[in-house]
Image (cartoon, rainbow, N blue to C red; front, top):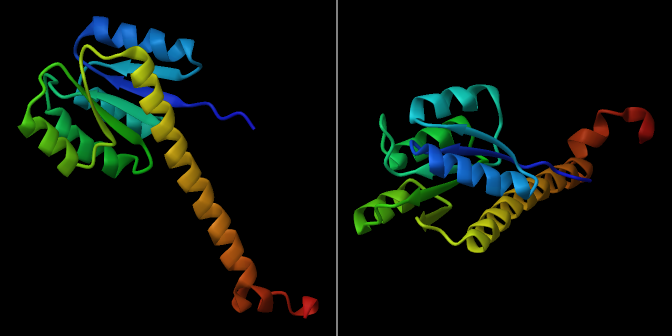
Length: 152
């Protein structure tokens, strides 16, 4: 089974958006890009994403604040902060808002791709494990068996 990974790039710098988009598309990701938090939220209302790369300095919202909003909108999404303005305060806020990673610009492309791939795989594996556990529980729970009395 081939799984397509949808990525959302949120950065006010068009050069960064274009570069990240080209990198991810060359690796087989389906990519959408937006330049601010408002457009990111609108995009997330109509499209499910596996991963979001979020600039910490956006024109309309802090990236750390957007982390929380995106988690509410799409809880299974991998959310990665990318920043050219690293600070202890930004790192702490990112951790507090449950960012999956915190990456500094300029980034090392193989390292970035490795982090994205690992995090997306971990989320997908957790999701599939949850479904397997639900199916196993369903098969081992008497209430489901009693719904088909002819099979007693």
